Length: 499
Image (tube, rainbow, N blue to C red; front, side, top):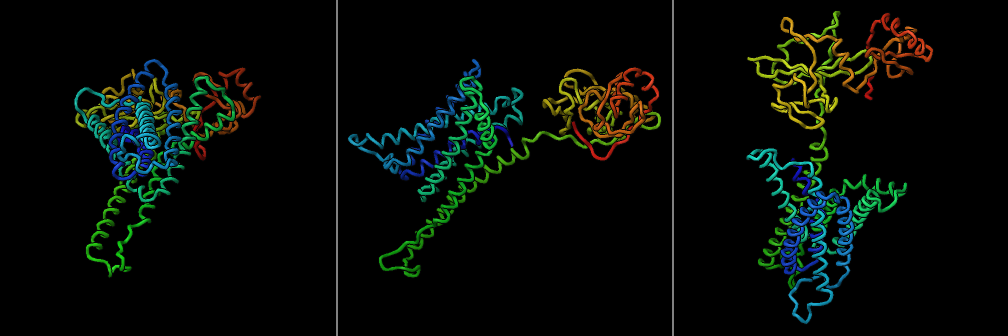
């Protein structure tokens, strides 16, 4: 799922929903004219929103502009609520003559334009904020990424245009339900946007930072991520209300049952019912499609990539790890993990840098000097750094520099890759994950769990663990003698702990 698609939906869904609820209050004839006029207003303000973001970002006032837009959008929510209370909201855009084109009817028309304008302006600004770190295409030539992002923009824009039109028709049958849905939407979004404006004001120093304000903002922000789902749920309720309202059966002055109706009346009834079902199906399809897109992005597409399982690397009696070249020459990333004497889990991987006819195995730590131990994953023919999403040229794996994984010293011997455990011990400093293992106090020879030892001491690149302060102090006085007499005894304990 393209991030452009999801970002457009998240930013413009409030505009689509509030426009739909307002349009549903108008008569069908005036609704079409108002939709067309509001579409032009929204289009112009969307372009303005992009330009405002570019200007604000270039001169460093983006937080101020975002805070101002949140306040303006809250005022637009209040205007949309007032429109419901004005008696001329119904049929607001019927063609009046010049003598009557003043008063509430004109206010309703201007109010609708203001709501559409402010939400469109904020939507365009938010889209640009959400996509600030995204490039539309990585190259200047036609490529798959360009086509996918272009299609995402077109489809998402079409969805946000047709959704208010369909929902406006659905809501026109039950104005009481529209009123309830609009009230809930206004309340929820007013709270969210006011808290975002409050946060912006505190960040800019316009308001003092207090525990009460921070607490309120934190709680509201925690639930604000579900605001799009709330709108879709309200639209679903509106669609269910449309279904339950049904299509009234036609009646004549003497007919009270279907048998008494004329054939023309029955055909009209069936046509009206079929038309209603089509509108209902259209609204449900748009709602479900939007929901599935958002939930897919939140639960799957936005998750960070996970590393494949690492096979245990256990040294032999000579302190060496042997891996058959034939087992790793298939071009796939083969990950291994070695448990160092201090409990650090040292990951490394092997990959054939060319093909099975030209075998050249790259042997590297699953970490780099720039991004740390986030690791690498393989997607197709690319090896990608999880931390920064940089694609690594596979033939360069094994060479130092840039975001390339750190080279690991090794040798080839009779069809095997041979790695000394001592080299992996030196590589423990590149990794932060520590597992629970059994270690020995070098002074008292007491068996300990490394994660539970109260004292530890680093000496010549090796970590020693102690069960008491006395043994710790004794070791510090003469570390050479105790370190030389201690033989490493590494045995994984039950369970694993990540620090």
